[in-house]
Length: 459
Image 1 (spheres, rainbow, N blue to C red):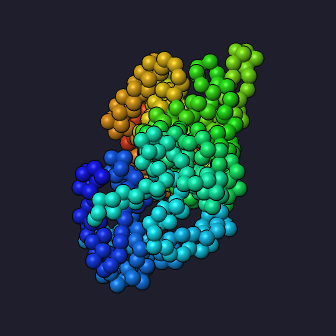
Image 2 (cartoon, rainbow, N blue to C red):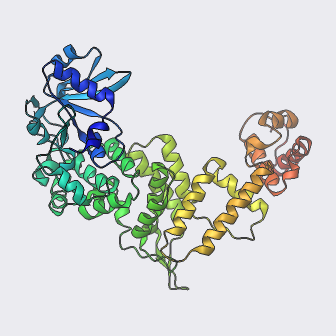
Image 3 (cartoon, helix red, strand yellow):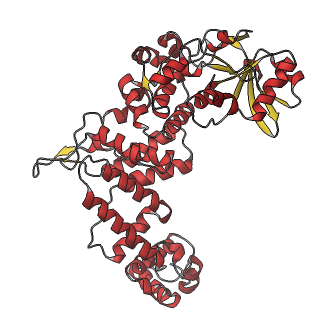
C-alpha cells in the first residue's frame, strides 16, 4: 500500500484500532472516509468496522455511547472526538424498502463489505498491517471514475430505496460516470424509492448541491425517473422551448443556472427552481411569434413554496428560496432613477440582495449565448445599490424617523391597520425624496395621508 495512506490516518484513529487489537479484536477503516482518502480528498469523518460486538466494545473503551446498538453501532469518545464503530454484520430482508428487518454479526470483513451499496464504498483498510481489502474492484472503479453497485444493481436498490438517490448524488459529488448496468437497475427500484421520507430526499438533494456540477446528479434523476417521483414539475421543463434570447430549453437553462450559483446549497436550490413556473405560463405571442412566460416568477414562487413545504425545508430556507424565485427576473436599465433603485431594494428586501444579484448573474450566464451587455447592467445595478446604501436612505418602515407610536400620539388615533397604512405611505414618499425623512416633516405628512383616507382622530 502506498506510504501516504498509513501516514494520513489521524493518530486517534490508529489508537482506537490498536486498543481493539490489544484486546484480541481487529478493526478496519471503512466507508466514505476511506474512499475520500483513497481519492486524495479530505475525509469528513472516520468510520471503523470491527469483529468485536457492542458488549465487547464497551469493555474495550472507556466512553461508549450506544447510538445504533441494534445494528451494531456505537460511538466511541476518544480525545474529545466521537468515532463511529460498527460490528461486522450481515443483513436480512428489506421488507420496507429502507432498513433491514434484521442484522446478524459476522467475523469476516469480506462478508461485511458484501452488504454495502457501491464498490467504492466497499473497501476496508487495516492501518496496523497496512493491508487494503477490495473484494469487489472498488479501486479499479475509482481509477475509471465509475460508480457501480456491489453485485446486482436491482437487488441493491430494491433493498434500500434511498440508494438510487445516493447513486445520483455520488455521480455529482465524486464526478463519476454511472455504470450502465447500475443505471438500468434504478427504474425497477423506484417503488422502493417512493417509501423514502421527504426529509431524506431533501438531505440528498442538499448534499448533491455541494458538488462542482450538481447538474450531473439531476441528469441521472431525469434519465432514470427519480425526478418524476420527487418533482414532476421539473420534468415539464425538458423540451420546453425558450424564447430567442436563450440557447437552451428550460431544463438545460435551469441546469446551467444551478451549476453557476456558487453561494451554497440553498442558493443552488433557488437556481434549480427559479424557472419552475415557465412550462405552466408559456404562450406564443401573435405579435412577435416568440414564446412568452408572463408572470412565471410569481407562479414559480408559489410552486416552489409548495414543493419546499412538502420536502420539509426549514421556514428560513423556504422563505429565502421563494423570495429569490419571486424576484429573479431583474429588468434593470440605466435610466432607472435613484428612487427606482430604492424601490427595488425595498421590494426584494435588503437581506436578500446579494443572493438575488448572484442568482441574476447565474441566470444570465446560463443563457448559452454572449451576454456581456446584460452582465454589465447587473454590475451597474450593484454599484448603484451600493451608492444608495452608502447614502443611508430609508429602505423600510424601520428606517423612518417616526414610529407607529409617534403616529398614534400625533394623530390621536387608535392602534390598528391605519397606522400601518400611514407608515407605508410615508415610506413611499421618502423613497422618492430621502430628504423628507425628518420627524416633523413626516408627522405633518401623516395628517394629510389620514385626511386623504377620510379618517380623522380616533377614526
